[in-house]
Image (tube, rainbow, N blue to C red; front, side, top):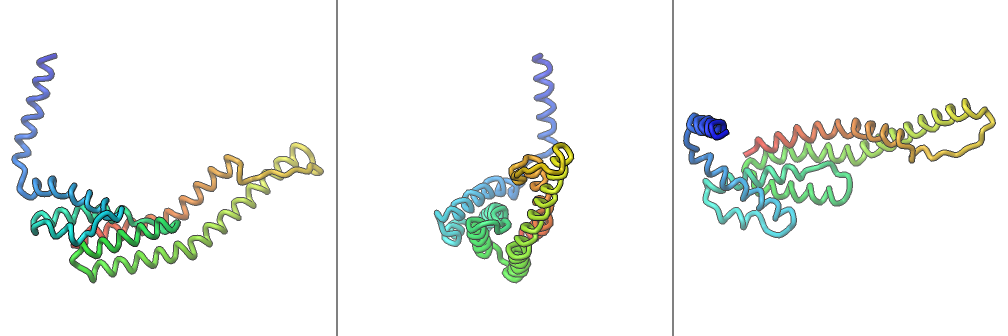
Amino acid sequence: MDDEIKSAREIAMAKLEELGEATEEERLAWKYRPEGEKLAARYMKQECELHKELGKYDDKAGRYVRKGASEILIRNIVLPKDDFSRKNTKRAMDGLKELKKDKVALENVFSQLRRIFTHYSEQGAQQTKQAYESLKAEFTLKIQQAVRKQMGTNANFRIDVEKQPQFQEEWLKVKSQLEGQYLKLLDEYKQALSAIE
């Protein structure tokens, strides 16, 4: 067993040697990106001001702090499902305004995001409600037909379709399909935000 462990260690060491020494850029990224991530988390909790905190870093380190913070802020941009998500997304976008240098490109992506959010809040909510009612009517009809088939046409019953596990399962599928369209666009815009300096 010692031979196996030793040879595995030797293999690992050989692979490390192949990789070579870490560059200064890599070492800076390893050190400062996590600091940027922590900074963004504190900012999102409203425990600090980004511009003041960023001023503590020189240009080299600041670049990686900005990158780490940007990643966290971008992850906090979500569909506006409720007041909390709206406020959180707005805060993340405000933070990105402080981090990103290319304000024109940033504002272009933000305007596209706002259009998606508006559409999601208005038409998306309406589409979701219509899809829900349609699915509910479809399930109600199926259950009524099944019960009449078993108990006869004079069967008098009342079933709450919305509490049926099959309905809930099907609704989750339909809802995720509807939201999937928005999430796909949101992901594309998040990638665009990541690419902006």
